[in-house]
Structures are given as structure tokens and as C-alpha cells.
Length: 555
Image (cartoon, rainbow, N blue to C red):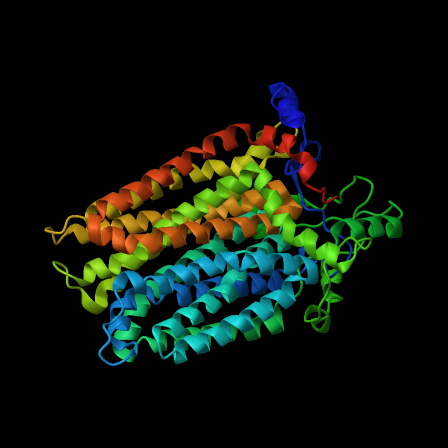
């Protein structure tokens, strides 16, 4: 508590000049406004920051398609619940399962995507990202086969639970892998690409699932998903190196090796220079120590055989294995002491809860009177696709640009993570209004044209689900660095818990009270979560000063 009292007792000038974890000197005014590379790269060619562009973009592409495929497999069942009610084998003379029960196939799958990360992320911090990604995808592939072969509702539900457990790393470890490859001034665009695919998978699954199940049967949703997931498993084995890296230890070793004597510089491509209107130079953690080897030479010594090997993450060698296991499994829960974790948890959970509920309930509403869309009910998700593209494009263009502009205007050249939150405000307003728009339109049973409002409302939510998590994930990586993976555990748990609760009860709630009441409540909750952004944006740096002791330094 004394740290909080100290942080909020500082003058504005003292806060502006402070450099708590997350505050980085991005612009060197004395060097003609050069952009500092943060985190500082090392001399080691295995350092993900030193990888060639093609390797980084390959891994980014695989992680993006990974989260796309997982979300497609998870959501593709939503528009098919009516057919599953008829096609799923059941004992003779027994009634088909009710729709509210069938929604459990979605709800429990989404729940396990989050809860699985309680296991996956600590294990990735203990043994590495690469082995956990491969093993988790193997579990997902096996469970998807089980889904396709399930002969009863209980068997299918069990398969969906295991499938969701294996899918967990797509929402947490994959995001951390992307963050570990790119510098601060590049991260926003990389995360924008990742979240476009993350959101797009849900919407494309919602569109395709209805047509696949009506033409081929609902089991083919799993077989087609299996082909995509199998491809990703092979791609992870062949092309995704380990990204966890002992930066602190390597920088110390580099300093000893170089003797604080050598210097080097790095420039981005001429095209990137023209876009950013800045020159880029490479800075190590101290002014007297910088890499001696060019990026090109470093990358040329990082062989393919090395890239497909396994490497343990940095861990405290003074602790026993049981102590390390306990430490890593406890670490995510400690991040609840960080305000930013709560903010992103509530944003992501509220948005995805609204999205999953709309994707589950919406097609059923459009399948019945007065719409009677039948197989076309999944077209509701076209609004989400359009919203995703608009939100993703805006985030890709704006988020890194604002960070650079703010750092250039700061007299100390400092970049603050809270500056990214500025781009979040319009999306929060639009997506909250989108939940209400969908709910009130869905409740207009006597008006055929109300589907326009439903599609438009989902598009508004789609814009938010692309932009807000992208900015939020970047904020966690920038503000809490080494703890980002643990923060992602809590965000996926919150996302899954809220989505599970809303989906679990929404079907029955809509049937008994209509769509207006539940979606009115969901929108009000999302609005409340959105308002919490204001104190973090305004006082976020003071909060980081107060919690600085919880965050290990990376340099």
C-alpha cells in the first residue's frame, strides 16, 4: 500500500520523468529522432529479435492460421445445433436434446480453452513454447477425431471438452510467441494481423458451419477442421522455433565478449523508413555496449537444424524442479495484482462473451419465423467479417504510429504503454452499442427487416473483437514484459468463464424473456468494463510505478 501512496503522491513532472517497467526510451532526440530498438537485441543468432524477416513472418503466419483454425473448429458447430438435434444418434424412442442443452457443446468447449491455459502456459515457461505448442496441437487433433466419431451426445460433449483443452495455447502462447519476435515499434502491426485471424476464425466458422452440416452432415465440420489443424501441427513441427530466450543472461555475456568496445547499426528497409519517417538504429541496454555482428550475419549462422530443436527457457537454477513447477503455476494468479490484467480480462471476456452468445443464439433466431433462413442462417456472420476487417485495418495502421508520435513529442523520448489505449476508446463505444443493437433487433419478431440490425450489430462487435484485444495484448506485453504470458493465462480464463456463463444461460434466457433483456444486460456490463479504461489510461503510469516491484526487469 505504501508503494501506491508513493506513486500517487508524485508530481506530474516526477511521473513524466520516471521510467518504471513498461516505460521505454523509444526516441533519441540527440540522435536526430532515431528509434531505439526495444527490447535490446543480443549477439545470439537464436534471439528471436535477430531472426530474418522471412522467419518472423513465417512464424507470424503460422500462429495466425493456428488461432484462425482453432476458432473455426470451436465456432463452426454453432449454426449446426438444429441439425445436430436431428442427426445425432440417440436411444430409440428418446426425445432429441433440447437446444439449451446443445449450447453446452459450445459453452464447455469455450470454457476449456481458457482453463487449459492454467496448465499450458506454466508448462511453456518451464519447458519452452515449442514443445507445448506441438503437444497441445496433438491433443487437439486427437480430440477432433473423437468429435467426428462420437456416437452420442455425452461422447460428443466429452470430446468437445478435451478439444477445448488442447486449443488453449492458440489464445495465449501464440500471442506471446508473436510478441517475443518483434520490437515495441513493430508489435502493434504484428498483433493486429494475429487478432484479425483470431476473430476471423469465429466468423468464418459461423458462416461455413451451416452449409457444411446441411450439405455433408455435421460430422464434416470436424473432418474439415481436422485437415486444417493437422496442417498447423506439421507447420509447427517444421517451422516454429523456440521463442523463449534468456535475454538478460545473453546481454551480460555479450557485454563481456565485446568488452564494451564495439558498435553497430541496423536500418529497416527504405520502404519502412519512408512510412515511419524515422531512421532506426540499434541500441543495446547500455550506451557502451552494442552488438558487433550484423543482423544478416547473425541470421546466417542460425541453421534450420537449430531452429527445429528444443531449448529450455531461462529458469532459476538454484531452485529444484518441484519449486520451479510451483512457482510457474502460481505466477499467473499473481498477475491479478496488476490493474492492466484486470482491464484486459474484462474487455476480452465481455466482448467474446457477447460474440459467442450472438453466434450461438443468432442463427437459431434467423432459422425460425419470420426469417426462415434455414441453411443461410450462418450468413449473419458476414457482418462480423466486415467489422473484423475494418477494425483490423485501423489497428494495423494506427497503433504503432501513435506510439511513435507520442514518443517523439515527449521531451524525454519516452514511450508509454497507456498511449496505445487511446485507439481503444472508439472500438469500446462501438462494440458496446453493437451488443445492444443486436439484442433489440433480435427482439423485433414481427419485423422481417430486423435482420439488418442483427447483422449490423454483430459487425460492430466484430470491429471491437479485432481491435480491443490487439491493443490490450500489446499493452500487457509492453507494460509487464516478462509477465505477459502469465497475464495471458488470466485473460483467457476470464474470456472463457464469461463466455461460458453467458452462453450457458443465454439460450434459456432468450427463450423465456426474449432477446432484449439478456443482451441489454450484456451490453450494460460491457459498458461498465469499458469505463474502467479511463482510470488506467489516465493514471496507468502511476499504477505501474506502484507495482514496479512485481515486475522483473528485462535488461
